[in-house]
Length: 268
Image 1 (cartoon, helix red, strand yellow):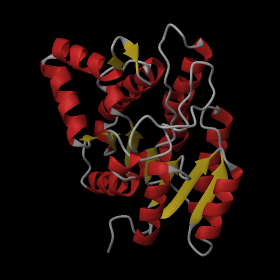
Image 2: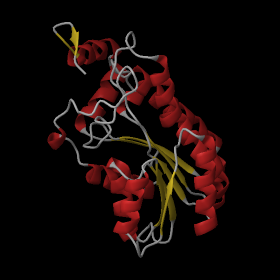
Image 3: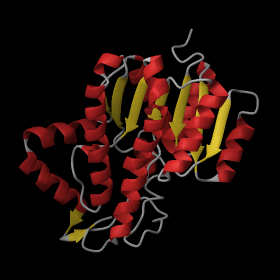
């Protein structure tokens, strides 16, 4: 029997990228899945795709505490409890700090950090009751600050620090707390990344076809949850970046600068 059979799993941001891949992987494993997103049309398409399964899909802006409370409360009302929460919803940005509106950084922090805080806060009593798992989908940018992504890096550093503190607080409750750093993964996050004014970039600077797929990333995350791991850093580049920054931070500064700046010009 699957580890996830009959477990209630919350996945925020479940209509695109890694979140959608997680939903697609969990349903065949027998999980009862609750997911949320801001796009009503995509949520409807998800429900059409899975009409006869235990799927709860609800519109929710994770940067809004009341939305998060309503989503988590309705999940418990429908499924009775929550075993696992995967805080996946997130947004990126691409702009030098000197050029960016402060509101953009505020928005990124509210979605990436506070969104996880809100959803986890309201799910926590059930997670403790079930001795379940709390997951935060972070990034290599949560270990190493990246140029042009100051707000994104700040949000992921905050996420990991909060999760580490939470893990320590819950050690005697039997709850596992884990953060995942997917590295460069093929998803919509770069297309949706905010520019200096807060508008979606609408394009990706990466060759998406050469990146790890969202489906492969989801499989890694689910295996790590089953094994109750503490951290998961994916891709060779991601592991190298984390290790290099830990051992040789000054060298990491130079290499990261050279990657993002060509001939003295910032490459988005």
